[in-house]
Image 1 (cartoon, rainbow, N blue to C red):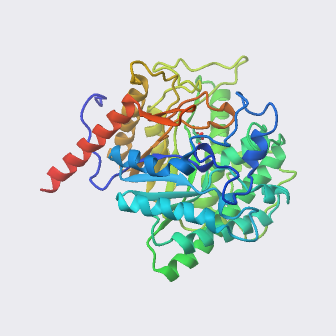
Image 2 (cartoon, rainbow, N blue to C red):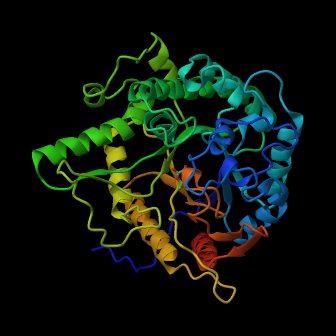
Image 3 (tube, rainbow, N blue to C red):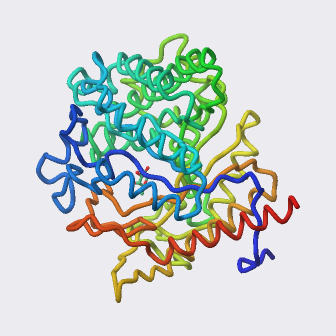
Length: 454
Ligand code: FCB
């Protein structure tokens, strides 16, 4: 048996990082020419966010970015994953670029380079410019073309200093929560529409990859291109044929629905069989456009899906507990998931774990935040990841979600995921014990890597 307390060594070239996203940390929502996004509209609509909060100020990263990069550097990480706010650099999502917006990211990228921290950029972390929503948003096929224009412009301006560019973060969420159950912006609840939206998101990914490739080739740039998907293993609650079939359906509609078009150029039949396809329109060349070769796959893993057909559904026992989001802590699911991906996708590129982390009810006591459960969460998931690597899965990096406590979408500020505590009254940042642990863990990894080389 694998000993979860043993020392593990990751490859010496391994990427160690922390992650954030624009709307969740930047604030400055109407400053320097930024246009509104669907999340500005959504948070300013009554009753959408649990604590009635908005991202207007958030962690005010737009004004604290220097300090925040210093903190990132102090954590010993060699990579930072963040997203660009599309409406900050192109206020309407079409038409003129906003130079002030690009300046902000240019300064950030320079500072990261100065600290030797690789930039991993996401183009779309759910914040569509409201100007495009007013033209139909992701239900309008044209939005995919606008997205490719935006992607090409980012590549043109920054293609010389970004390590990886991901087109989308978790398109499953944009489609299923934005259009399926309406919990996220733009707050539409229509399953059939959400399926069409998922197709346009995938199409926009493929068009953006093609547009960026052309630009990067001209720049002679080595920036790697990919996408970030949220994934889980779906496990049947019992051995009954019903539970097992339901778990496979869950996996097909959430994981394979995004993986198959990209890596097999088709939607999974098992999912198509049970879906409401009356609003689903795929043009002739779409699957070729979507299935472009990519250089990396970003996987966000938080928990497993525990699937039960009983009424009421069986709940997982949660041997290792549940996070403050109510998500079961289940590290083995990460190993299972990665091994399954490796089995099912011969064209699988190298993987980054682009998000993994937990929310906890963190409190400052005597100037300290003792978040032992988070330390344990990360430690166990790193062991699970190491297991997958030992079994041949090509994983090149791990990013903790998140660097800072931040605006957790419809949960507002109540859920704290950060390694760094944020006091929202003063904008003071305080390193939690988990930040110190992660810092020391990475230092030890780098030390071990150095002694291996000598
Ligand atoms: C992921 C999101 C990220 C954050 C974490 C907790 O689904 O990508 O922005 O909200 O969950």
